[in-house]
Image (cartoon, helix red, strand yellow):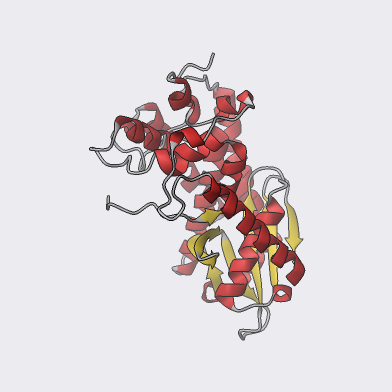
Length: 310
């Protein structure tokens, strides 16, 4: 891999991690940096490996998102996969990645091979839990096909899709703000005056963060697609129960949200030894006092020097 520079940026997921635990944030964005290199310090290489770990629930959500993305990319290529074919695609991904985790392929390829939290930390996974997880994935895929939003995206057609799992950015305080929109489409009129529909597929329950995440998407859409706020609709689609929650925002809402991003950026940079160089020091990022969070953290091994969660 290339020798990249670790520059400061902001994203909604980065903000959540900063609030959750400063030490976890340090390992994820600073302590693991360069850990992909064979000559990197042992601690950085371990942190990089741990950074790639996902829990079963996170994995299931990722499988659903990738299966939907692959389906939509197939539509863009002129193909028409059936729901059964999409479920089978998801099943193959699950089987392959389960095997990667069990066989510890991540030891030689941390980024390219699946490493499940429960496997790494020796937590038992009963067959019933695996079966339930697979059914959850299949039910979410069916929820996608049954959703009004998926129908609108298909009806708009690939030529009018504005985004499809593309990692994009806009600037706040001269720093990149990263977004990755599941799918967005121009709806309605055949001109640039059409409305923009931004869809986020959710495999879990509604969260207090959903509104803020959608406002970040809206700020990006205003900049990238030239739409005013009243021509942009964000929609959270909760695939497990079929609920679809539309969200639109006023200019005042978005000004306030931009201010909250700036406040978050300043808090992150205040934690750094050298904000201009984006240099962080381990001792400046203490562990959370809420110890229950540690048992759910990828970096437990680093913080406690063991993989045994007694």
